[in-house]
Amino acid sequence: MIGLVEKYLLEKIENEGTIHMTLVDPEKVTPSSASRIAKEAEACDTAAIMVGGSTSFSTSHLDKVAKALKESVKIPVILFPNNITGISRYADAIWFMSLLNSADPYFLMGAQVLGAPIIKKFALEPIPLGYIIVGEGGAVSVVGKAVPIPYNKPELAAAHALAAEYFGMRFVYLEAGSGVGKPVPSDMARAVKKVTDLPLIVGGGIRTGEQVKEIAKAGADIVVTGTVLEENKGRYNIRELVDNMKVHKKTR
Ligand code: 1GP
Image (cartoon, rainbow, N blue to C red):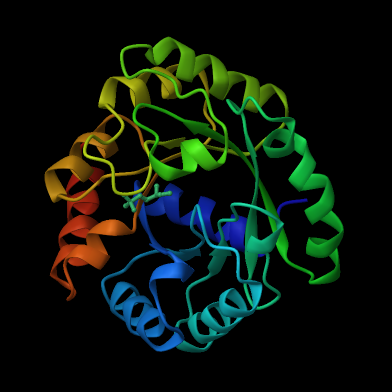
């Protein structure tokens, strides 16, 4: 069943074109700095806050950060878990994700089986997502034991996305890895959108409005940024990122 957060995201994409989400890595923030980042992001029209990181494991710290985020903004707070320790009762929803190109069954189905009853107990909204790691991959690629899809093989990314659709997943995420030097190439996003209508999330290494514009033009429905906000304090960058999506809407 499609829940409220998912409906909100789909309607926003329908009405606005590409939308932006702000990623907060609980390991890199305090509850108060997380709250400040989220308020700034909300003021700049980010659509939702995602909370998660490749190496974070302290559920009590995650709880404090998620609670602070919930108390600071009206937009949804969505968990982006790296493991079952990435689940908090204080969020609105959770990307219920399988790392489709992991070589380790734990990241394909093991963690999900352990996490599902916790999600139910906390009454979190699960949003099914096929997660695909590409290129350099960053820390998440190592932690998730992924076999990253090379940038020059867009057809392989498309095949993974199609498999996600056939499994009944409702979103697909092309992940280049947090903080990497080279974001997902636009021809890879294009190849995915050519074979499936699933909403496409793209993230990893996106730092400029130009990059946002390019990936939005290639068909990304959601662009996620985290590192750029840590690297540049202040609201200018979020505004620049969000504005570049709006510029794009007219031509899509
Ligand atoms: C990482 O895709 C997200 O999981 C965001 O990446 O931190 O590089 O913006 P950045």
